[in-house]
Length: 203
Image (cartoon, rainbow, N blue to C red):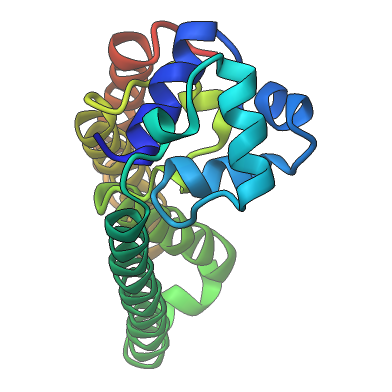
């Protein structure tokens, strides 16, 4: 079993948050999040404190350090690639917006809602790609690892639909209101569904 998975299991068994665990072993919450995301491994002193806190031998918590380090390096490469894709996605979306503004004069009169809509759509695409960290922690604190892909899909599609509603409202201000409210309502319903099905409540 991977160190990240084992650590998460032990933490859930104790019923504590990442913040609480970080306090107990005197490190930052971001370090715990990094370990649980498979992007880092604890130093020798932190590993000792973790094993002592959970009452298990260090070898049980991190049985094969060589393979664990190799897996972390692989995860770090994937994470950097994902970041690069995200940057390219943002640049492409920005270029598309500028192109649309140049070709479609009515958009210039509704720039604020257009920008808001595009930002929301981008956030939705990040969530669709499984970037659960872009969904604020209080919206996902009860989502299990197994449910994260489905949760991200629902939240991502819902967010994209809400952003699309803003863009439609900005691009076609004279269109029937159904073209704005239909994607907005559907998006909100999908997000609520994800919260109650996978997060066991709204907060």
